[in-house]
Amino acid sequence: MESRIHPKTAALGVVTALPSATPDQAATNTSEISHEFRLANGRLARRLRQETAENELGSGQFSALGVLYVHGPLTLTELSEFERVTPPSMTRTVKCLVDAGLVTRTDSALDGRKIVLTTTDAAREMMTETRKRRDAWLVQRVARLSPEQHRALAAATLIMKELADS
Image 1 (cartoon, one colour):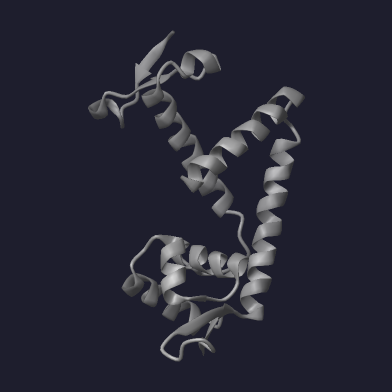
Image 2 (cartoon, rainbow, N blue to C red):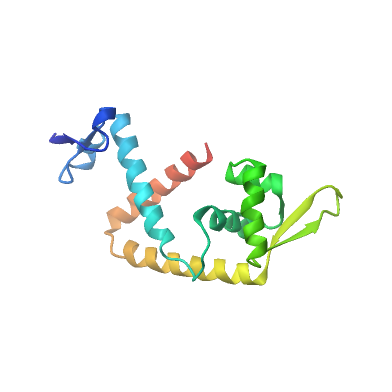
């Protein structure tokens, strides 16, 4: 197998396969495939993030808003746990979303000490538009894949979900 040391990972001793390598050659060990997977996943995620509705939110704010959009009303603690950040950090994020008119705060009916965060109509519209743009971009690219690549992508999707949930 032809391989080279990637300049940014040379210090880590990570060897990456040349683009012409077959999938079997590129996956010669767990370290190599993990590294290549992380890079490819990061690049795809960055590319998909470019397909958003017009907004000025930072990535952390947009991510928190997405969690509220998908999972419905949550407390600050619940949102922090979803996003795997500290409550003080999430407090700053939520303040920006409230100030932007994208999230409302209401007292919890179950516990008066807690505040429940809910998306506004403007936030739901933004998230719906973003989802449409991202799905359209990805559908165009996936449609170009061969039937074999479709099957491989379906299998890889299940594996990615399992990794993300671990």
